[in-house]
Image (cartoon, rainbow, N blue to C red):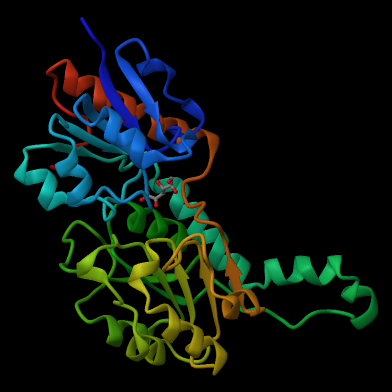
Length: 314
Ligand code: 8YV
């Protein structure tokens, strides 16, 4: 019996794809110089896609693959996949929720600490010999007793909330609906919540529903002592408006793990000392990336064994 073909847009993290090699011919697109011509040559054999954030699984691509049965993304987010096009063809889509929530929340806390307490700036300050020459750097601001607004209290948001509460912060949240099982006060209006908060942490999904949710009005409400942390998607923030708000002091600082056009970061952000920038490492630990990779493998295997999917999106 001939093997099925798995089109792989990435290496599945540190776990790799070797566990699937007995069952699948694996096309490692990320090693190909001309991926489009490779896709063209195997299009009739492809039954599964393994992809991640930034690798756009468009309607065009889906329509090019007549035998595609499952798209397994190595991410909790699925805004890079045309779900409607997949749904119309009855193609299954799976993601990697839960296993990365704690890690991503930790990244959010690291960014908040690094930004509010000037940790990244202070490191640059020491290395540049400025402590010796200029004395102590400017003071940071506390986390303790500050009010933090979490935008999107899903799996990651709830882990962030728990961590903020442990830092003696006052936690409130905004989202499309109130979560009755959550102890934190709910706000149905982001701008008015931002007006009450010292810090805003974005943990909501990307996609059309949250596009540029953080706009000029929200940043103005957050105010000149406010700090914005983004561990969700670059699309959630109107990036040029954020840059302007940082430049003119509408808000104080920002900690960003995600950007509008990764891995391109506007020079204006690179030039600012009050901004901490990370290369989208929210889930990037050996443990978490292994668990995500395992979930990708388990979902694909389950599908072809006729078993229920572990983490089905559609
Ligand atoms: C990526 C993420 O999966 O899960 C998500 O939605 O944004 C990240 O964890 C990671 O960058 C691997 O591409």
